[in-house]
Amino acid sequence: MNLRPSLLVRPEGAGRSVSAPLRRAAVFLDKDGTLVEDVPYNVDPQLLRFTPNAVAGLQQMVQLGYVLVVVSNQSGLARGYFNRSQLGRLQRALCQKVKDEAGVELAGFYACPHLPGPRDVPACLCRKPAAGMLKQAALALNLDLSRSWMVGDILHDVEAGRRAGCRTVLLDVGNETEWRLSPLRTPHHRCADLREAARCMAQAAAQKDTAADAPRNAHA
Image 1 (spheres, one colour):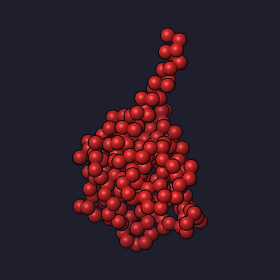
Image 2 (cartoon, helix red, strand yellow; image 1 turned 30 degrees about the vertical axis):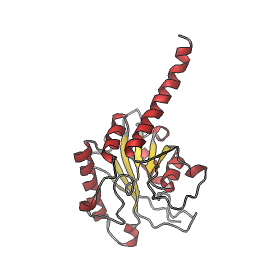
Image 3 (tube, rainbow, N blue to C red; image 1 turned 120 degrees about the vertical axis):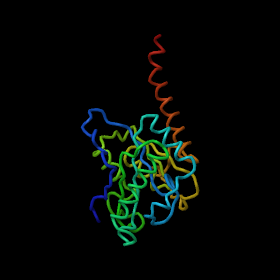
Image 4 (spheres, rainbow, N blue to C red; image 1 turned 135 degrees about the vertical axis):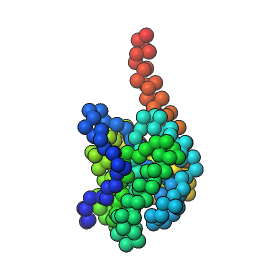
């Protein structure tokens, strides 16, 4: 089994608050098919296009207090389709695009460079559906996985989120084709786009606040 760590590319200045005493909640975002339109093995910044309602969704997630982290399988590195410098250029372009068009920032960008293994045999500890990238981000960026979300367009994303202890959203946009279901591969929510995902997060937060207030109200 290949146990090399995942490639990590972070925006300049990210992680400066790692020493903060309070851990933050995050939304982990798959890249291709979730945050941007899926162009296989793309490293051309000119081809980056947000998925429908992605900008509004990102803005709402940040307003809810979440930091945004991209976690992406990028086997094109191992296949020789592009190199780390090219992926780094794409990452910087994506960070700038998020900042320019959504007015928010990515706290981190994590990519697994490894090839997939045979079915049901993990190739490494970072490639989704493994949770390695999420756990690595949690350590580096001081994140609370139990208060965080994983959003993706296939069930591998859901499984990675559940393995990390996050709540999960599947963007039901037709990109999942196998539907190999199990408890780990069952999303907490199914949504049409990132804006709807953000609404689910807001509703979950409201329900939690209501539950927290219930004992006090009972004694009022």
